Every structure is written in structure tokens, then in C-alpha cells.
Amino acid sequence: MKDYPEIKRFLEKQDEEIINLRKSSGKAYFDAITSGEEGLYKDYEKKALEEEKYFHNKENFEKVKEFLKKVKEPLEKRQLTILYLAYLGAQGNFELTKRILEISTKVEQIFNNYRAKVGGKEISDNELKDILKNETDSKKLKEAWEANKKQGAIVEKDVILLVKLRNELAKGLGYENYFKMSLELNEQDEEEIDKIFLTLNERTERTFERLKKELDEAISKKCGIEIHELKPWHYQDPFFQEAPEIYKFDFNDFYKEDIIKKAIAFYDNIGFDTRDILEKSDLYEKPKKYQHACCIDIDKQGDVRIVQNTKNNEKWMDTTLHELGHAVYDKYYDKRLPFLLRGSAHIFVTESIALLFGRNSKNSTFIERYCGIEKEKIKDISESAMKQLQMRQIIFLRWCQVMYNFEKEFYKNPEQNLNKLWWELVKKFQKIDFSRDSPDWASKIHLASSPVYYQNYLLGELLASQLQNHIFKEILKQKEVKNSDYSKKEAGEYLKKNIFEQGRKYSWNELIEKATGEKLTPKYFLEDFCD
Image (cartoon, rainbow, N blue to C red; front, top):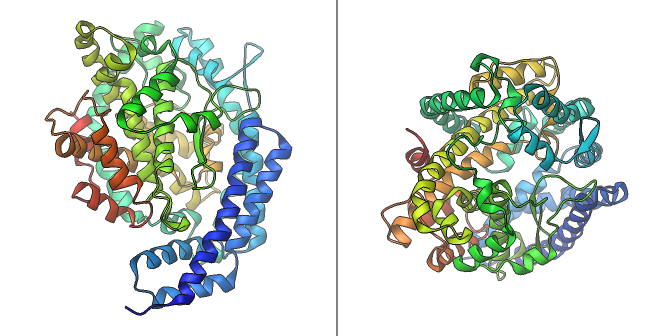
């Protein structure tokens, strides 16, 4: 095999320079979202722009294309492919890139600083979700739901402008629109994803209709109204993306004590130490802070942190397990890999790990082991846990359909009646027959801050089921998958060796086939959660 020392030198220099850029922008982003301070957002915007400018370098892009034609060595070829996609996406009009970053940073700060006002009082997202979950008065539920949606009207014009600017950038690079460009640059095929989404929609239709009927009957009884009177504010979540609890147990009762300690114990048992991650993290509510949760790998050299607004309840148990799933993936890259190959094979692969671990919050075996519930009570809990998890998965899948299809149509034509489009998709996929002429869609932060992302959650759910099946049957040699315990060292070692340490050495489809013996398939998800 012919050796090209100039390629090796080029890649080493790229590694060195990109490390410094990523470290700087990663730390700036963490500081901005945990403080909400305008000056820190401006600092992040500046650092992120420096990173964009680096990849805008046309001379380096030409070198990458030239080297890709020559190189045969697999690891060098993979690094150059990753660089090619990064440089390609940054070759558009730089003034457009600058404007997009400026607006998206501004919108994200607005979201993070926004607090809904209910009854004349500003409340946190945690408090708002408590109202939606526990209140039975329809007028009060409507007030809380509408208070959440008011942020949509604040950012609507900026989000539409962002979509138009992103489309302009994509067209300058020869793409039909930003949606198509984003998928291609992330090594995803639109037709393939469309086919998966269509299959899942068709296969889950009957199950969702049954679950929705059960749900509607339970909620109408709880709120003392007829089923035909149910509105979006009755479904316990601002977007009906999370499953209302209607079965025998309130799972919050199991998580009234320190959920962080429970998460540490779980990850200890699977072989992953999370204490260093948690020490650097920002875990609790603060004024102006980002109200959701995320994981930030500051430098791909071991500085990994999570951001949360933790409360002792089931939602935050799920979220903590989820975010630490991302974090241990980032922590346990093989640090001998070149910097460019440290990372997940694809964003949906790290989502699959996070989702796999997050499911445990509704796993009766997890509840027995980490919440101190007596064994004789677990049989009762087990049935409700399986039902609640099924409802969670199917409802989230249908919500993903709304987001994916809305964004796809949004980027095709940002001039259309988006309010109408939104509620048509909600009716089609979530079976909520409601509409109003208001930019409720714009109250979803992902449209501004994480564009063309939602397909990764759904693909992550499919892979989570595929990995879970493989771990139980091939690694732990267990027959039963549902409500089983995989907080064992063997499971952790399998994930570390076959997923985490592999980094980005392989494309996502190669990695999945090497790790599980088959390509990505919806088979196991459908077996787990469909009637």
C-alpha cells in the first residue's frame, strides 16, 4: 500500500487545530446556557463563528478532495470523509453563515430565558409540567398550555427567517433545500428514512389507536368532561410527546429520593464511573438557565458534562439516565484514536445509548433494585411498568412523525400556512383534532437550535431495541427481554468495546452490523412495543 506522508501531516495538523476550536466553543456554550447571560451568548457566537470560518477554508477543502482520491488506508480515508463533509457544509456564503449563527443564538437565548406566566406568576418548565399533569380544571390547563405556546409568537419571524437563510445557503451549495443538505452531510438517505417512517406509521397505527382510546377515556374521566371535549392541554405535555400516566401506579412515587445517587449506582453496576462527569455538570434549576437537558463533550479528551434542571421524579430519572448515557459514550472513546475519529458513529447511535438507558425509569426490575421496593410488590408494578413504557414509546414515535414531516415541508416551502400545516400533522399522527391560527409550532426549540434532528431520536429508538435484544440474548444469555435487568458489567463491556471505543472508525451502518450482526432494523422495536 502506497504511503502518503503529506496526508498524515495534514491530518495531524487538522486534529491539533480543531481540538482547540472545539474546546473553546464547547466551554463557551456550556457557560452560556447555564447562565443565560447575553455576554456569554455573544462569546459563544464568536467562538462558534471561528469554527465555521475554519471549515470555510477553500484551500484545505481542495486538499481534502485531492487526498480522498489517493488514500487507501481505512482510518485515514474515514478521517478525510469526515473532513470532506464538514468542509462541504461550510463552503457557502460566509456572510449567510454568520447571519444564521447570529439569529439562532439569539433565538436560543430567548427560549432559555423565557418563563411561562400562569395566574400572573412566572413559573419554570418543571412547574408548568406539574400543572399539566396534576390539574383537572380545563380552564387552568388551557391557561398553562397557552402560556407555554406564547414563546412561539415571540420567535416565529426569526425561525422563519432562519429557515429561509438556511435554504439560501444550501441552494448556494447546489442543494434543493437545507433539509436535504443536512441529511446528506450527516450521511443519511432521505428516501431510506421516509420508508422507515412510513413503515413505522403503518405498523403502529392500530396500537396507537387502542392506546389513545384508553388514554382519552382515562383523561376524560379524570377531568370530568366528555371525550369529544378533549383538547391538546389535557394530554399532560405541551406537545403530547410524553405519555400521560393512566395506569395503576404514579411512577413519581418511586423517585422521591435522590435520583442522582440512583443513577450513579446504576452506572457503577454496568461498569461506568459517572462521578467525574457529574462533578463538572450543572444539574439544578437557576434563573435564565436552559430549561431542558443536554450533554456537552467539551473537548473529546475527557471533559464531558451534562446540563439538567433535576427534580426527584420519574421524568428526571429517565432524563438523568439518558444524559449520562450520552456522557459515558463520550467519556469512553478510545483516546488513542485521532481526534477526528473520537465521537459517535452517528448522532442517532449516541441517542440509542441514551434512550436505552433512559427506558429503565419505567423498568420494574430497575425500580426494585434501585428504589428499595419489596419483591412482593414488584409483580403489581411490573404490568403497569410495561404498559406505561409501551405507551411512552408509541406516543413518542407518533410525535417524531409530526416533527420530521413538519420540518420536511417547512424547508420545502417556508411561505406556506405553517399554523395550518402543524395542526394537520398533529391530527394525522397524534389523533388530536384541533386547530388555531397561532404559531404553536414555533414554541419547539429544536426548529431553531437543532434543525433536521428529530429523525435521529426515532432511529435511536430502533437501535436501542436492537441493542437491547442483542445484549440480553447474545451477551447475557437471557430469554426474557421485557423488564429485565442489564445493569451488569458484561453489558457495559460489550457496549464499551463494540460501540464506544470504535468512535467514528466506521460509518453508522457498518458499526451497527459489526456490533449486532445485522443492519439497522425496526423489527425489535415493533416486537417490543406493538400489539
